[in-house]
Image 1 (cartoon, rainbow, N blue to C red):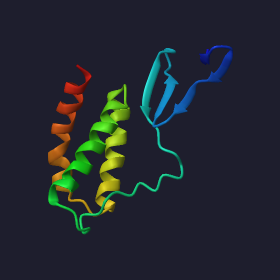
Image 2: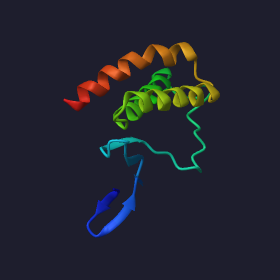
Image 3: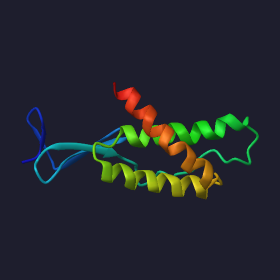
Image 4: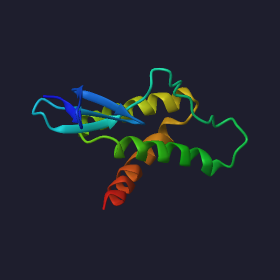
Length: 113
C-alpha cells in the first residue's frame, strides 16, 4: 500500500506545505506537523521592542498550529515539546509557555467545530 494521487504512487508519506501525510501501521491516513530540515526554529525574541501581548500571541498561535496539524495525541505532544524547547531557546519564559498550553488546546478544539 501507499499514498496514491491519480496514477502516481508516492509511498508511505508525503509532505505538503507544513503537514506530513502518512500511513500508520493499519494503513490509515494520519497527519502531523512537517518542518523542513532548513527551518532554523527561531521565534521573535522577548528582548525585542514589541508590545508584551505580541510575545504571548506568538506562543499561542504556534501552539494552535502544532495541535491542529497532528492527528494523533502522541505526535502532537512530541511536536509541542519540541516547540517549547525552541521557544525557551529563543528566550521565552517556560511558565508563560506552560500557562498558554491548555488555552491553546481549548482554542484548537473550538476551531475544529
